[in-house]
Amino acid sequence: MTLPAFYTLRPATVHDAALIQGHRTAMFTDMGSDPQGLARVHDAGIAWHRRMLAQGTYSGLLVEHGGEVVAGAGILWNDFPPTADTDSHVRAYLLNVYVLPEHRGHALARVLVQTALDECRARGVNIVTLTASDAGRPTYERLGFVPQKEMKLLIPQATA
Image 1: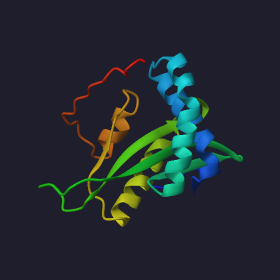
Image 2 (image 1 turned 60 degrees about the horizontal axis):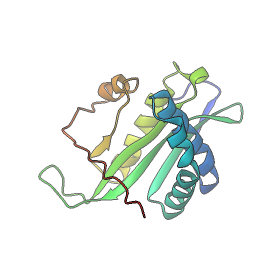
Image 3 (image 1 turned 90 degrees about the vertical axis):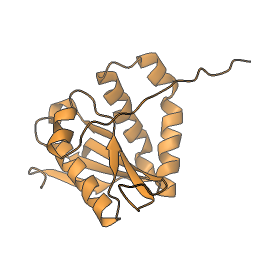
Image 4 (image 1 turned 30 degrees about the vertical axis):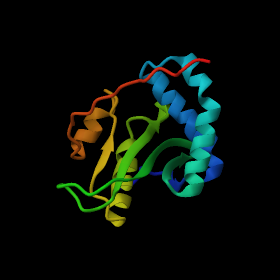
């Protein structure tokens, strides 16, 4: 799958950390997350993206239009033990898939996810997981993703 005319794809660098975090904040805002909580973790998110990009533990993909980054996606490379599904010890977690509202409807998210999946194949990774928003779910399902049974527990932080 190719990008529409006038759009280009490039890898993210450590210099894109603030931009990626800005997209992440917008994505979670669109999904109804608490804006104050997102603002509280903004700088920590930039530092995390910078560190993970520098380590190569996170790979980012960015789409540009007219010199502006208008969409992006990321892959977090995780080390897991083999299972009955795979003998590979690397798994991919797809995250930060976001398209600016004025650029939606051009299949940019689909191209980003497909490019990420191509990178997974190239690295021999055959298990890719993600957390889908309601808006993103149809795109992921068209690409073959299926729901799984995951649970979550938020452990309250201790106060001094």
